[in-house]
Amino acid sequence: MKNFEGMTDEQLALLYVGGDNKAFDELLSRTQSKLFTYIMFVVRDHDIANDIFQETFVKAITKLQMGQYTDSGKFQFWITRIAHNVIMDWYRAQKNEHIVEPTIDNDLSNLRGASILDSYRETEIINEQILIDVKKMMNALPTPQREVVYMRFFQQLSFKEIAELTGVSINTSLGRMRYALINLRRMAKDHKIELALQM
Image 1: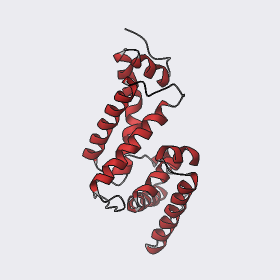
Image 2: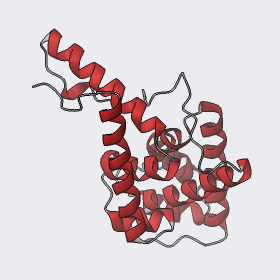
Image 3: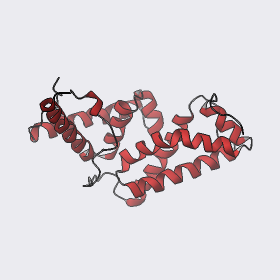
């Protein structure tokens, strides 16, 4: 059995293109958690996220087998771009691309913010409430704004990378971020929510 431990994702992808199915299994295990978290953040429905995740990997396999992947050093970026396109296709099929209806059972609980909280219980309670409020407000943002906020703050992508991934100009990415921040501030003000964590 081949040891893939020291190999990059790109090397694994090229091994798979060369016929090594085990290389793809390793690639899947390395990327699935991060990719599923991204999809789940955008669509906020576990069943839909599963469908999109599976379709993303089917498309990735097809593209790999057709030789449409070259080692650019950015496999994660490449597969996230495929996921973005699958998500946008799904939204178009639903004909409600601009309508956001937050679900009751998913308020971004898959993101962990607890590590930044203090050990003091009172401060902890306040900070927990702030994070709950922020997650609720994030869920209320239109999909393109929520997506750019996630990519920027949780994946730490540059606006250039966000623009490439989402197929829009850098100015559009910046505009979506600007409107997301405006919307978050407005929601915080309207609901008298304090957004500063207690230290």
